[in-house]
Image (cartoon, rainbow, N blue to C red; front, side, top):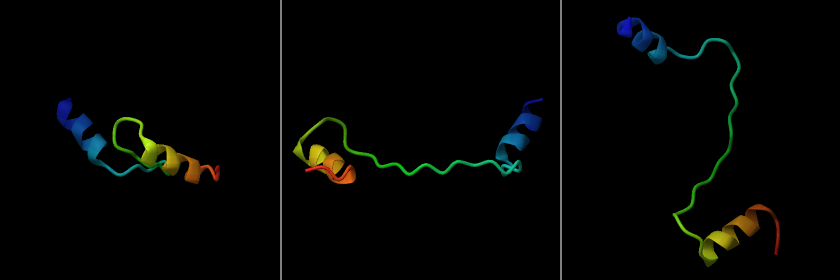
Length: 45
């Protein structure tokens, strides 16, 4: 049974529905650089 599941999980997705989400990561914590980057992303001063 595990071999069948592993085979299915390794196959490409075939059903045609896919959501591509743009994301950005920052270092852990909050500092001036992170705040500036977020403000710039949101077109805020």
